Structures are given as structure tokens and as C-alpha cells.
Figure 1 (spheres, rainbow, N blue to C red):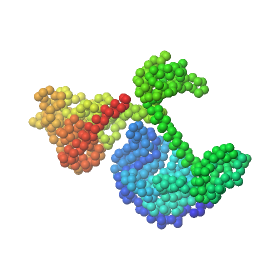
Figure 2: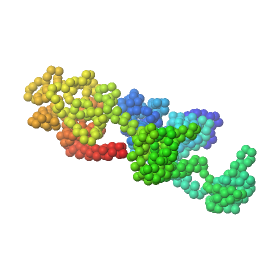
Figure 3: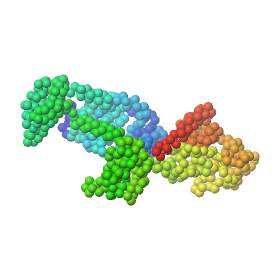
Figure 4: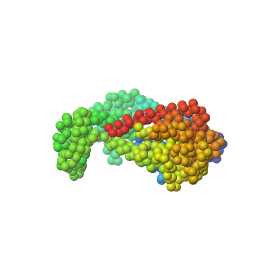
Length: 639
């Protein structure tokens, strides 16, 4: 296709073609609505290209302006808990999702333009590759938004991305259309066009496996060979004649500098693969004018760098495995200790293959650390046990197994992330307090409303016993109210989002509640006491709790009339007593786990006892597995 004479912007270049392709474009794009696309049915958006410091709260503030957000999740590494650079935002309805996609796509978040697309839970569309095109030779100034604007004229785009490395474009990108026809239309009208003074190639995307098989086939049938270590006196004619005896040659060139002097290497291209293969086998390491030639298949620079990198990594891994468990790291060394002194200190524990104190390259002064390598792991282990903390000179030295820098960094990051997570859990805001986000998974606190310091919210440390949420108070009398919070029975979370406070229920036996609507002291039948037919765990012999007052049945209509952020709490209040009857020890945790289910499923559990018992059994198995694994993990951390 001939390119236009002028140098328009990417969007303008495509607009010049739109007049002739109007009918094709209409067929490819169709009348797209969010409900029409399978990927949009869930109203879930993928948000990519995020800065690692972006949190759920930042995204909530941004996307909640469009419409009510159901949930937000920033995906993080399972070990280090660092952001992976992408998140999922779920809206309550598809219309809000479409509006967010149109208005917030490529918006700057922490200085980086985000990339938004519909979340595709079914990977079949991505794996088939239908409608996916590849664009190369892109100008470095073309980013995701410019590429999207250029190709959106031909159909609905599911995904659009320019490949980047360290903030700069790699010169190629991908556009995934909803239909195969839209992709064909884009290839037909943009392939060969000038985009920012560069002629671009547009074609169907070929999966990496297929590309690799074609590359392997080309490698196996090579005709172009590379020759180096040539004598500077070898002429082009001699070079040609040297290889002509093995078959017909299409070209033979010695690379020369500006002065015409040979650079010592060249290329020979044969017509037939067999001739090239024979030349490599016969002439490799053959001496010509006193120099041994290097002859091999010609490679592109990127391919050669790839191979060298793999060889380097392989050698690095072999070296690591060779010295695994025998190489020790020693720090806090006195400045006057040299290699020989270090060797003498550790030689009593076994045969040392090397001992070195690290020094400054310029001044030669000791850096205060070094390495000692033993011949056997048990010798190294003994040295670590006995030498760590021992005084050598005027300082106590630190001795441990040597680790690679990246391994040590990842371990430190994991430790820091774990500590931060514990701090966040300890500082977890109460419902109604500043910083609390409605709709987040609820945690049922133990009686008293507060957790002991260091205790984890969902899966406790081994040996912790959960108590009933609405159990009797440890002492007689009324509980002191918390300033700024509504008066609620013990164990209940404070009211949220302006939920009306329940009035006191009339006590059994015709009694009246105390002034202020507070329940009567322990020992009297009053509201706010549940599971009264069960004995309090730590109560004196003969002390009995009160008879429970049965809650009203929760209907789907009543649940639907409540605000979304209160629905889970209402369900939790009904589920907890039922779960407590079967599993009083884990009742709070099982309730929190079940509340992750859909609202319709929770209503079904309230009506079907057998289904509820099955879910409780599954939850108990998960908890017991976690409690069994936790001591093992702590032992590994100590080791």
C-alpha cells in the first residue's frame, strides 16, 4: 500500500482511509453495548500499568466518582506482598463499568497512565488469538493512548498495549479486537502506512510457540555463516575462493573500516543449506595464515546476547550449587585482620578452600567483611554455630551462610512485608471509625471488642480459643459505653452508615428494661443476651446464662431494602448463632469465611440446615489445615 506524502499523526493517517472503509468498519464494530460482550457481563474492570505504590484506597476514590464500587483488589506477590502493577475494580452494574472505561482509561495515577479493559475471566478468547494484531516499527513517541486512538476507528478494542522497557517504547505493540473482521480491516488499511514518519507493519499476532518453531526451523536450515579471526591480509577474492569449494555462494563479504582495513570478520551466504553446513564443519578451527578460524551459523545480535546471557546464568547456578552450604559470610571484622589471619581463626573447624577479606580497590583498606569457604557442609555448619558472636580482636564477628544479593533482598522484603501486615492488623479501624471502608470483609471480634496485641484477625495463633460473640460478660453489671459510639450489646460492631439503632426488646417474664434502654445486669432475663441455654465457658458451677430471644426471620425483601454495606452484617448476625451451636470454638472465624460467599447463597444456608452443616465442615477443615501448617512455617523462619 502506498503511504501518504504528508506525515500526519497516527489518528489522522487512519482517518484518511475511513471514507473508503466505512461499510467494513460498521460491520466489524457493530452496535456494541456492554451487555453484548461476554467479558463485560460481570461489570469487572482490569486496571493495569499501575505504580507499585498505588493502593485500593486510591483506586476507590478515583472509581467511586463514576458509580458505586462493589470491590477493589490490587494484586500482590504472595511472599513479598508488593504490588504486581495491576488491579481489578468491580462495579454493581455494567453501565458504570462502561462509563469508567470511557472516561478514566489512560488517566494518570501517580504519574503513570493506567490501562483499563474489561476483565475476561474466561481465558479462551485470549488463547485463541482471534482478533489480535501485532504492530511493529512504531515511533518511540507513540504510547498506549495514541495506539488506541489510531486503531479504535476499525472496531471495538478489548486490549491495547505498547511494549515498554524501563519507561521507553520497544517499537512494537498489540491491539486485540472483539471480532476477527475488525482485525482484518485494521490490517488492510494501516499496514504500510506512515505513523509519525515511520512505515509500520501490521499483521496477525502469532503465538510465541509458533514463532519459536519457525525460528528453530530457520536455524536448522541456515545458509548464512559468520567467520571471524581472519588475518588482515586476506583479500575478498581469497575469502570467496576459500568457501567456494563447498558450494554455490550468493555473497562473501569481509567487514572493513572507513580506511578499508579488515576488521577480522566477515559473512558468507550459500545457496544451499548443506553447503553451508559442510563449510562450518570443515573450516571451523582450521588455521589460515597462522590463525585458527571461527566459523558458525550467523546470528542476530539479540539472539547472540540471549545465548550468552543463558550461558552466564547457567554458569552462575552451577557455581552456586557447588558452594551451597559451604561458603560463609563474615562481617564486623577488625581492620587489621587479613586473609591469613581469617583463615587461621576458622581452620580449626575443617579444611578451608579459600578465605578472603574484602578490600577497597583504590585504598586497599578492609571493608569489614569477608568470606570463608569450607570443603564440607558439616564443617561450615559447625563454624557458624561456634564462631558467630565470638570476639576476634576488639569486635564480636557475625557469621552466617553466604547468600546471593537478590535472595537476601527478597527475604528482607518478605520480613518487612510481614511486619507491616501485622502492624496493619493491629491498627485495624473499627466500623464507623475514620479510614473504615464499608463493604470490606468483616472480622468478628472476640467479646470485649478488642484483640490482644499480636493476635491475627482471621486465622489466630495456635492455641487461641474463640469465645461466643454474644456471650455473657466476665463481670456483673453494665459495660461502660465507648464515647462517640452508639450503645450496643456486648460483641456487636457499632452502627455504620447511619443505620437506625434497635430499641430494647421487652424482657421475658414481664420485666422492664433499665433506664436508657440498657439491658439488665447479669442474672436477669434481658435483651442483648443470646445463647442463654448454654453455660458460660468460665462461669462458676451452677451459673446459668439466659434464654435466647429468637431473631426475626431474614427475608430476601428485607435484605434488599437494606444498604449494600449492611447486608453482610445482617447475614452475619443470623449465621453466627447457627454456627455457634455446632462449632463454638471457631464460630467467629467460620462466620467471617462464609460471608465471602454471594448473598443468595448465604440466604440459602439460612434456610437449609444440611447445606449449612456442609459448609461449616469445609471451613473447619481449612482452619485445621492452616493451624497445622503455621507452626511448621514458624519453625522454618527460625531456622
